[in-house]
Amino acid sequence: MALNNKFSDLSKNFISPSLLRVRSVLSEPSNMPNLLTCSRILVVPLIIILLYFDGRWLNLLTALLVVVAAITDGLDGYLARKYHFESTLGKLLDPLADKILLLSTMVMLVHLQRAPAWMVCLILCRETAITGLRAIAAEKGVVIAASAMAKYKTIFQIVAVVSLIIHYPFLGADAHTVGTFFLWIAFLYTMWTGYAYLKESFNLLMSE
Image: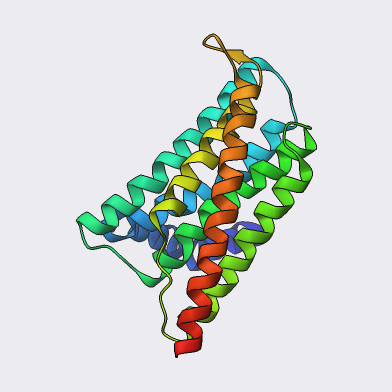
């Protein structure tokens, strides 16, 4: 009886209010872009686990998850702009979610010996450095906007990662060769845009 009373109190005082708050968040349209962004972060552990198990169909499933996550990247931005749902949290989470998704997957591809470790390390360093510079610039009231080349860089990274995850021949093409080709293109774009961001941020911060 005492145990039932404790469970009843727990349900009344904690579980029910928590469920109501979750329902309130989910039912609020303005939260949809941030929920989509968070879904990209939440799917990362599942992608990592799936990559531990090699297999043609499992690789396709994992690649599909990455593609769906990448689609939410464009969808959350579209919803935020179209319906004026932009928020400070969204501006912080969106690029962070992209980096967590892509960099985590790239590290796993190194583990699977499908991507060069040195290349992924340099990409990781670039992404970390630019994220830090953006944070410093934001504290000074300076906004470093994403360039068109940086957006192409992200697209090439996604194509490379998806192809390398598939790994096996698919639709008449060698997925691993295609992935390696696009990874090199993504790497060059990543390094070039990193240099451009460093130059721009240095000039902006020095002019403040």
